[in-house]
Length: 355
Image (tube, rainbow, N blue to C red; front, side, top):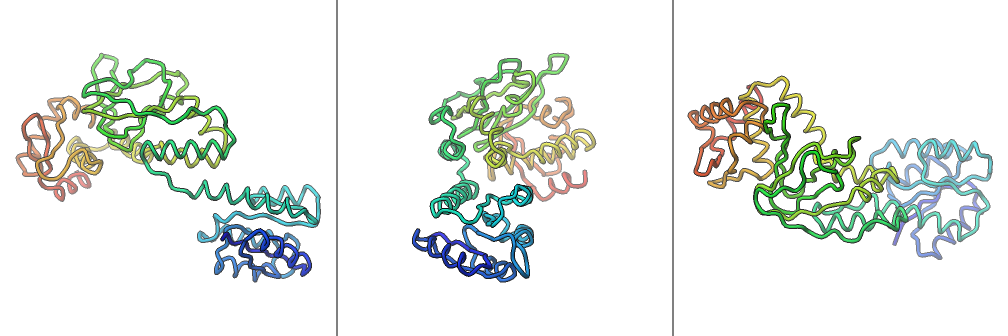
């Protein structure tokens, strides 16, 4: 049973509104002024709050402000009730960030519809979606309903890629972003001399190509290649842009899903500019371990020295020397098929932290 907190100083309005809601199977708690309402909001933890604007002790605006500043109550949908129909009341409440408002007297149907709409919105925004193809399909389906979008494509199927097979190529039309359901992928670019350098290593649960899809050129600015057998799902550009730009709340939630780790990318670029090769190499090895691309025991990653050099932004010969140095100090082992195994993660972390 959904819970509603009603903060209203007029006894008749408070009792009538509470009765309407109880008949609609809501659990209702009431407060006769703003101060009591704030206290009840924190103890009752309602699913939605209805609050009069003009009240003694603490007015509705102050109630909203205080609850919005409290992490435990900030996400509760908030609907203002006002006896006035002046636009200034509406504008002030909505500018502050309230979800809706109702002008008294209101019809029972209008009240119930306003609450149901806010609860539907809250349910979608609070829902957690799995980071896999099923979760992505569920998110897009729910987002479509939430925004009343009719033309998003149906369930996205998985495509299978073999090791060394291209997923997309630098300079081709950026028509989709891609989600890795299983397997590992590298992305790389070519510099002005035509030499390949690695721009990223990705695993199951990561998205690739999203920044290219949004780019001004409309082209992929890098190439993505499967490192081993992969299952990958594509999301058409049209779906991506609709989810990104049609609604602020949906956009925020979707960005959280597809961004992988933008802050990490910024830190990585700073490291490329200012850190020593040893530090960059140690950091890259630990990040590959954290991503699950390097596993404990003898399950290291098989990566070409050219790819590893591209990953840390140095020449192949330099990368080989650094890896050999790490091996000599017992930090890593170099197995067959160019496989890298971490032997001493603690010491590697020391190098990553202090160079």
